[in-house]
Image (cartoon, rainbow, N blue to C red; front, side, top):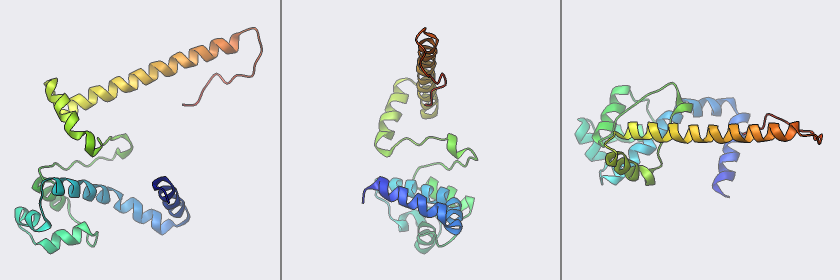
Length: 163
């Protein structure tokens, strides 16, 4: 089974089962944090024991969090993020946040540095430029379609194309 098929199947299960949907909603952010945490931990060659030592806790406490057997506090997650050199940001605007894929993160850092910008400043500009370019293309396509619909030849045209 391909990845997209698995994701589609999981989505269908989620839609059919309210308890599963509730579980996913509750643990999605924590699961995402843990995926990123593991990536950073592994990139640095650290173990759960190393993280626990940096945090002043036990390896078993880290293991319980990593396996979703406990609901960690904000403070615990912040300490975990800091232990791998990261930060912890929480936002109610999940659908408006973008995560740079792991394989592009170093490239983004270097590009930002080359422009003497912070990573966030650089990404803000890149995203803004890309959206404005896409919007301009959309407006041009809409204008072209409107002109085609106004022509003397009467075709059924929908002047509001869907993106």
